[in-house]
Length: 99
Image 1 (tube, rainbow, N blue to C red):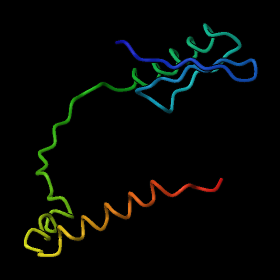
Image 2: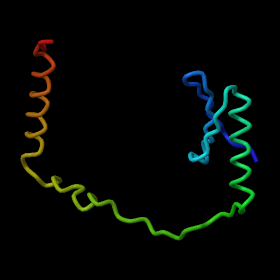
Image 3: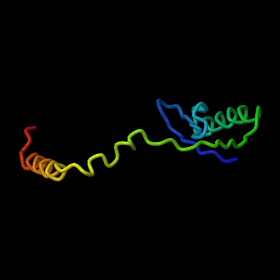
C-alpha cells in the first residue's frame, strides 16, 4: 500500500504526517527517522486489523432551504428591489473609503 506523507520541519525536528491517518505522526532528527517512525506506527495500526469497504444506502435529504426557492417568483416589487440594490452598490463603489 502507498500512503501520502507530509514532511515538515520545526525546531530542528522532522515530522512525517500520514495524510490518510491523521493520528500517525512520525518524529525524528532526520527525515529518514521521521519516515521510519511513521512507517512503524502505520504497520502497527494496520497489522491489527484489515481494510474493508463499507457501503451505506443513504437517501439524500432535502436541502433545508429548498422550500424557500422561488418564493419571490410572483412578487411585483422584485425587479424594483433589485434595481435599488444595484444603485446602492454603485454608490458604495463610487464613494471613497477612508483608511
